[in-house]
Image 1 (cartoon, rainbow, N blue to C red):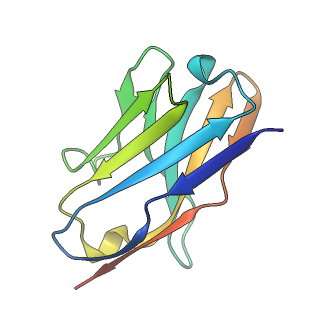
Image 2: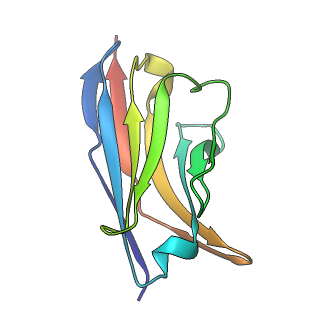
Length: 115
């Protein structure tokens, strides 16, 4: 059974930092492209960051320079370090695993940034 379990969300003041974790099980983690997406109320889910099996990373302009994605093959875990958070970063953050035509999602973790 595939599971992606996110943790690390919470309430933080603007300008603060949080680190999200996503523990994967039931997949050959090393082969998967892993990503973080977020969905704010009334908005579409959007990519926040992803990392290829070989470690290449990709960020949209909205988080570039503030967020860092990384992966630990031994722990089968992907991380999202978020710095300089602002209220527009408030959303549910979802972990994603992709390999060819297969995609898995976690249940999400809430991040709330207070002004």
